[in-house]
Image 1: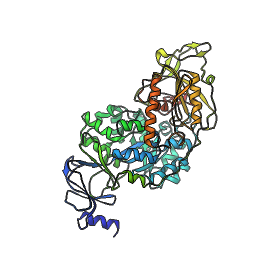
Image 2: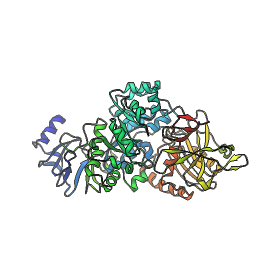
Image 3: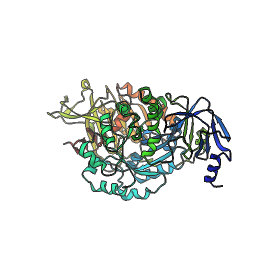
Image 4: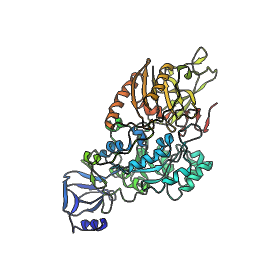
Length: 564
């Protein structure tokens, strides 16, 4: 019999189902009811509910609840610091059965080779990883990236079965002002899905942006911003990552009326935070604990997310729908006791059945050696621009200070929590090096350096001591990329990320434990930030307001230009 005929026979009860879950209830996201029911599964598909079934395999789920598998609608797997295979093994047990990723980070380093690596990996993972084609490589003209992906290099991937559409269109000024490269990409994906990225954009500018066919947004950081975007037809992806934490600000829009236009995403979340808090399950239970109706939270995590991205085969516990299922004890606690991905129960043995995919980009760090003098900043009599870090946000403020001097050089100002920041080009193209100042890290000594530097992933370093900054930067080349902490001329913490300078070759447990030690080393420098490493990584992101730094200099994002 064909798969279709088997599904029909098992759904009608003429044949035993492959798997039957008995004794529990399922959460009906249409009616909002908890329904006591057998759940029959044939292959990768649910074939029966609300009836009694016999199965070749019967699993007792008495006193527990079945909900649809969770869908992370926007993330960069690279920011988990592990490969797609390890991300799969790390996150799927938390109930995330679908992940919609943008390989934007690796694409900015090694181009189409990075996209192909993700597509090859997605064909092997147990979780259903879907790929959005990176729309902005390089993200802007204000930085040096490792690759350039015009539309001609994206089109060969468009028909791949794992590709959904065009990833977050960060260059919203390019859309509004009809940049030819932006227009070419948008034209090619008209009628398909185009992901949005337009922080604080409103009014006529937002209308023009949406007129290009862009439908989703994960950068809304206030209820007012989200409501305007919903009114104008956008689907809001409520985000809670390791740095960008918008869930609490967006709780007011998480209502039953708006739930068809909401989804959940993490964007950037590392294995340590996943181990300590969870993934989308953490967002669900946090929202419910703050008064959001369970129906709203679970709709956002599944059916509303699926519809936003045209994944019409998943998101409900119902016959004919994909058997992505999570078994939980209570809706409020939302802790996965059992997970099914495409009808397969998630076990260590299931992960062991995957074929490996060879890593790429192992020699991507090509930065020149630096010395302490390279971080000198000449004295200026006027106020200088200072990046203002906002904890829990990737938005930064454009602040100005008159900074102290030491001889003919500008010094850090620890009384005002102002230290140095620099970005060094690491793709072997031009050797650019730009210096500036940042406020809000809390560092009293030492330096922190990273090859994770959104979006072009040049080296970014913050520090109090120029000697320590130089040592941290040079050490990154030795370990082929990663994070380094230096104190008083000594490396006190590091983690190697040799896959394009972004991902580890180690199991996620090893990365998680290494991050614990790395945080301790950073906290010893005095940092007051909960996640200092990803905060460093977002300082060079010149598509997020208001002041950033790239390898070409300080960037006024509001004016979309380099400062003199």
